[in-house]
Amino acid sequence: MLIQSTSDKTRRTAQIVRDERGNVAVMFALALVPMLGFVGAAVDYSRANAARSSMQVAIDSAALMVSKDLGANPSLSAADVSSKAVAYFNALYNNKNSGPVTVNATYTTNTANGSTVTVTGSGSVTTDFMKMVGYPKLDVGSTSTTTWGSTRMRVAMALDVTGSMADDGKMAAMQSAAKNLVDTLQSNAKNADDVYISIVPFAQMVNVGASNRAANWIKWTDFDTANGSCSSNNYSTQASCVSHNKTWTATSHNNWNGCVTDRDQPYDTTRDAPLSDSTRFPANQYNACPAQILPMTSAYAANNVTTIKAKIDSLSPNGGTNQPIGMAWAWETLQSGDPMNTPAKDSAYKYTDAIIVLSDGQNTIDRWYGNGSSYSASVDARQKILCDNIKASSSSSAPVVIYTIQVNTDNDPESAVLKYCAGSGNFYPTSTASGIAAAFTAIGNSLNALRVAK
Image (cartoon, rainbow, N blue to C red; front, side, top):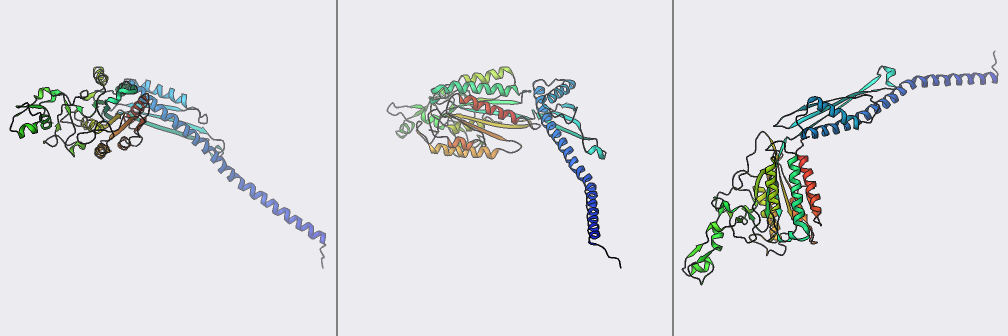
C-alpha cells in the first residue's frame, strides 16, 4: 500500500491552487481585450460627439451671419457666400479633433417664402482605439438652414399724447425711441411691401382727419347734438331748444376738427365694419384733439420713412387718457377696407401684425366713464374686453402680437390692464423717460426675430 506523506499532500494542493490561479489570469487576459475595445470605442465616440457638437454651434452661427450679410446685400455671388461661410466657421470652430472641416454654403432666393441659406460642414475624427478593429476614422458633419424675409410685417404704434406726457422729458424720449424703431424696421425691409407702419396718437379721443367728413363711416348724431345754435338765444342746447319749439341749427361739418370718440358698445371693442349707425365712428369736436392718425405706410422708401418720422415729430401733449381708443384704432389700421383702407395682404406671403401701445398713465376717461383726471376701473374693463378680442383674432397663420409700455414716472401702481393686454414677455414697465428707448429697442429686436422663420 502506497502511503502519501503529509508534505506530498501539501505540495499537491499548492500546485492545484497555482493551476487555478493561472486559469483565472488567462481568462482575465482574454476578457480584457473586448473590455478595452468597448472603453476605447466609448472614448472615440465621445471625441467624435464633442467635435460634432462644436461643429453644429459654429455652423449655426455661420449660417445666421451669412444670412445677415445677404439681407444687407442680396446680390452676393455664390462664391462670396461660400467664402463668408468658411471664414465665419473657421473663426468660431476651435475643436481640433476633427482636423480640417469642409464647409459649403448654398443660397436660394424665394420672394414668397423667404430667402434661404444652408451651410454644411463635414470632417472626420481619427480614432485611437477603434482603428485596431478596422475603423481608423469616424465621420462627423452638421448642417444649418436659415430663412429670412418670409414674414411681412405690419406695425401699429398707439402713442399716448396726453397732457402728462409733457412732464419729465417723456414726450421727447418717446419720439426719439419711436423714430429709432422706424429705422430698425426699415433696415429689414428689402421690398416695398415687407414692412408697413401706422402711427395712432391718442388722448381721450383720436383724430381720423377732417378730410374724412364726407365718409359714410362717420356718425354725426353726437356732433350735431352738441354743436350748433338755437333760433332763440335763450337756449344753448339742442334739447332745450327743441323742447321750446325752436329751431336747432347744427354747426357745419366743415368746422369739424377730425376727432372721433368711442363707438357704441359693444363695437368699441370689436373690428366690425362700420356699416350701420351703431357701428360707425361718432364725430366729436374735442378741444384737445391729437395729431391725425397716419394709416399704414410702407417703411421701405426713404420719403415714406420721412413721412412716418414727421408724424412722430408732430405729436404734442394734451388731454386725458383713453388707452382703449388708441388700441382700438391701432387694430383698425391693420384692417383692409374702411375706415383706414389698409392695403390688402398678398395670399402668397405670411404676415405678422403687431400693436405697440405706449402710455404714461392709467385710464381716466372714455365716452362713458371717468373724469379725465383720476383712475377709472370701468375704462380698464372695456380695454380688457378689447384685448381679449384682439388676441382671439390671432392665429398661427395670421398672428397678432401686442406689446405694451408703461412709462411710470409718477409712482403710479403698475398698470394691470397694460400687463394683461401684452403677450407673454411683451410688457415693458419703466420708471424713467430714458427707459423708453430700452423698451423700443427690445421690441425692435423681437419684431426682427419674427421676420426670421428659422
